[in-house]
View 1 (spheres, rainbow, N blue to C red):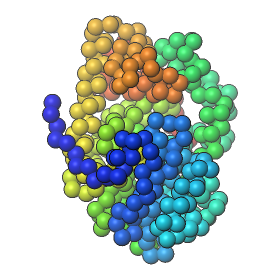
View 2 (cartoon, one colour; view 1 turned 90 degrees about the vertical axis):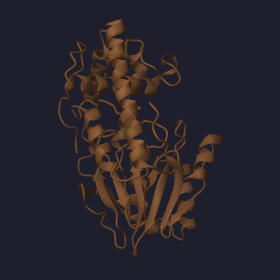
View 3 (cartoon, one colour; view 1 turned 30 degrees about the vertical axis):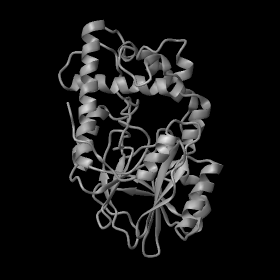
View 4 (cartoon, helix red, strand yellow; view 1 turned 120 degrees about the horizontal axis):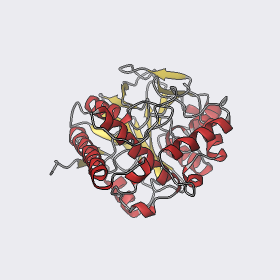
Length: 350
């Protein structure tokens, strides 16, 4: 199926992505700046943070992974915009993942800026969680999905990852669907776009013709849609619904948190829907051809960009949880799939 291509606008970002280097700080509009923040030891390489300057307010979208080198790059970018870090008044994370929310706690301490998340977003872990209970539940879930005992240690949460997730910033503000980010001189409308995370949000800046899409819509990569336990019952169905919500026009410039800017939201939404439909169809073909007995057995027969054997550690975990989300979605569409996938225990802590 040939779908119309998107229109590249972030040419310097695309060139940097191709050359595996950090892209430049760029001025996108009168008071809008793109600032790359390094994402160490990760194939995504960086998070694109966006600084928006209002009437005495300065809001940063997706501050990136917390590291000393990251704060240095962020501070340098803010200086290029004519400000210092203490001038920040607000921080919005499109979702709770560490490469988006990670720097927020450090910045809030340094600047006093408020931190905001969508009102349906949830913290994967909170300070009061018992690590032994959480880690044991995680092992039980992966075991149920059929992850072999010798692969469990690399795929499961460990104490270091648990502590890291606990230390992510709790929000000071919760942003509701259709509301405006509370900053003078800015017109940033919140669109609730669950799927990649339970309460992911995109931000629409109509005066500048920009949509800040977080990880919901990226120009090349299909965002990871995982079944998280506890968590939403059918994240892929949520993703399809929210793609329809954000695909309301095709001319605004899309400012994603990774890769590079582009135009063509409706075109990209059509591509993402097609990709995920094809993935579900592949799952059905695997079920027919191999009669798998677990989510793991399905996953190892699917097509992966670098091959199943290349998947290790966190990438392996993502592959299995993504496969589980397709199984749940297909069941919701009436397909009888006799593979164990637990129902979410409870909603995750707010």
